Image (cartoon, rainbow, N blue to C red; front, top):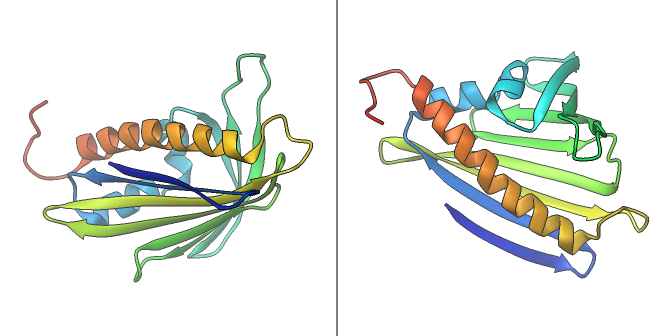
Length: 165
């Protein structure tokens, strides 16, 4: 897994994380873009509700599990899939404490597996409980955790020879 955290400007946050998944790109694409399974795929989401959709575009609400103080965070996002380019563009429509949050997922064949990459650009609101730099560190750390969990689940569900663990 490679990671960089960069500040595009003093007030813009940027994270860039990738992970190798030992599974074919079609399987990785299908499994990670099935929004209805995200509460099982990610450990942080408790519920996803599809609000509107076309073949390649989704508006959906994500709810997280309660935080340490019992608060349940939720927001609405839009996600556009470009299967031919193996790229997904997403943005928060209800950004909450963010001024904006844009995410690009990309998938590339690598050997017999797939390289999945998340690039996130955002800025926190001045009145947010955390500043942009601290949120960049939080998003970077959590992305590594979630990507490893997703890798393990996608590999376990991959078709083909049984995997020895």
